Image (cartoon, rainbow, N blue to C red; front, side):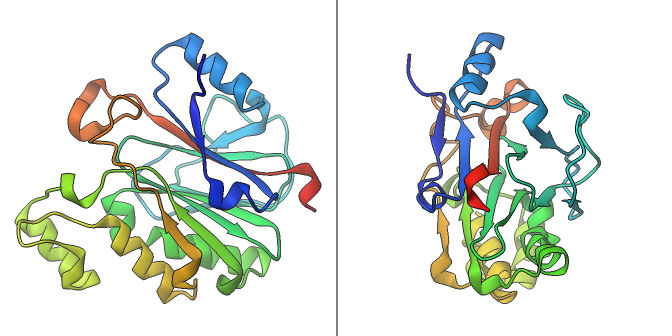
Length: 236
């Protein structure tokens, strides 16, 4: 049977982290096989109650057992420097943003939908890492994971206008298709992450519902993809 996830190779190749996004997990059997494949126990996974905001949850000290399967708090980003603890977000078109600080060995994961993107959640995650871990943005690698692409993301005139005022004209097309990748990259660069240190998944959730979930396409029947990042034990 095939793999139920895709690795974030840009980060995996550092040898410091496990970073990946699940494919469709349409049954309990799929979910069990996914956790087996990624060699992850429930006690090693933490996540938040996602509310499309810009709050960042910080995990500074090991505190097991975590309240699995309950979320830690209302937040849309998690940062930590704890080894062998997977931090995760759940998406179905929104962008999972993976962050790795190569020097302090701290990590972050962000759920960036249009609301969180507008509220600069990716930038706030970097700023929280600066505050808590001494991160320098120039030392970060960032990956914008599988999500809906601009060609499939048409929004209202009003929302497109709001984004243009906030991020400039290049964030939208004349027919109101938003580029959430552009908006997240812009805010990351504005807080000091080098442009060349940011990479983007080429996959579109709306175009590839054979592999991924898309709320735009499937509406209420859409499941959620799991994106996670974990510092490996030998990375310290």
